[in-house]
Length: 482
Image (cartoon, rainbow, N blue to C red; front, side, top):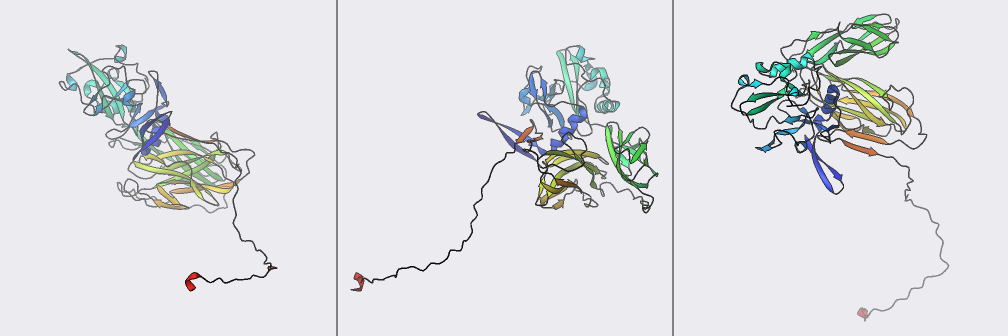
């Protein structure tokens, strides 16, 4: 869904389109690519956006109107601009819907130019350290005559959630021409899955977790990377882990984390005392059929202070805090999921920020952090996934890509908060930011103290006092009675 947002700037209005489904995706993609936003390109401060492609969006800086001083120049043909904006390194980003200038030769007939960045045709290859998965994905989309890293200029590398774009130049008798390949799909690892997603042992006991790497390429089978993954625990006093083998050191609950190929997944690890009953061995479920069964659920929820560090203790009313929730997909299909966070007090339930829509791959795990301002009294935070909030604590389930989940009981998780102390001074300013299609929208709410007076209407009993005078009535004839 798209909507228009109007920004007032001096005496004129600027209109731009915001794609709410891409808001969280843009933020995640920029972090994955280590892109800064905004970015100064050719003297202009430009914001990143996701331009919609044929299958997946693409990261572009600025708008078609921002492109100038390039060769060939910006132009409009058949309702399509030649360039959508700029790539990260300042190269103009070609619009794949713009009519092709060269229809006379095929790819294998062209004399491709080697190292175009050394011939003044483009900027330097801004990142020499692209992974093998990125290059394999690129070459899978290019003709064999371009399977040479020295002939390809990467504008935007493909990622599991966004399309890539590359450009190459070729020599013709009438000059130098270029060709841009935009719809490059990432074929490398798409998600990491830790199995099982939870386990319980007694103090001194162990459990073996496995890390499974899933690929975007449907021809690639999942790979067990348990021995090469990076493992860690968030509570070393409760557990330790080595190559997926977790050991219980003390009673409590810890989160076991695995990282591989830039991907992350987590699992719960519970440790109980010897006196507690042995947990039953979980039965191994049969694998679901394609797209028929699956589940989305909240894996964990954690309270943080304003700096992002874990917070324990009593909240202070009016102060800013953060809450981080981790979500997981057990579907074997990809799709968009709605993430939400709510703050429940004794009097009401309110949303913490806006909903966030993220794309989740099979077995994918994702995190989202919200900022919230503590209210007086006891309360709790509620993290949700694929639930639609109406009012109070009423949540309606939503389908995932047209599929109903096996259960919605775990689509929300609560975190109880201790009573909030009274603020020691004026409440702090709260700042909210959300990424728009072109520019981020920033709202600053500055709290103030003020006195309010309320008029109370009530009945007051007034004693009846008899009059000291007699009432004398005089009747006067009316002319109509004569």
